[in-house]
Image (cartoon, rainbow, N blue to C red):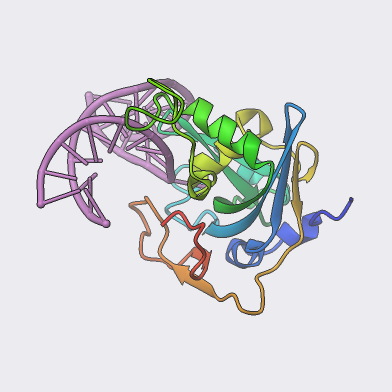
Length: 213
DNA sequence: GGTCGGATCATCT
DNA sequence: GATGATCCGACCG
């Protein structure tokens, strides 16, 4: 029950933590609802010298990125495009701003709650018709429950309220888990950035059907 | 199957 | 005033 990853796990280079978080389990307990998923895709934002990071040296410490300067093992949650939330695990020692963006999960538990949250967050249902009748929202396919950083936050009920929260205590807990023997880790360029876009700092479980792309 | 524009707002120029 | 560590629906093929 107390099987969470310790702060020492996160107190290492972000690229290493990003690799080793693949296969780990995220458990959220929000509004009395438990959901869980297995991490299959991450991105490392390595420090002040990483020009793609929210805490790059040219930006410095601000209200938004403050959590990145905090101790290892806490959450950095920010709003993107004014619409979605994104979850990071803060890595490295205090005052060294670095983090790992969680980009996709394989849904494990609480799929009903995930579906409900994802559906509620979707303005309109899919193409007209749906199941039950006119205007009925279409059921979210399992594959789309937690595929992408914004979607996974919706599915787990993660918002800015969890910024700076420990990753070892309810409502948000990261449990140990590794890539399986058969699973290969693949490093690729990060998604959706313009600066330092070539660096292979995105890590995925190769071939997983739950990846964002 | 792929591509494109809108939503929406804190942060930074 | 422009820009995102994104997602969704509309449209084209």
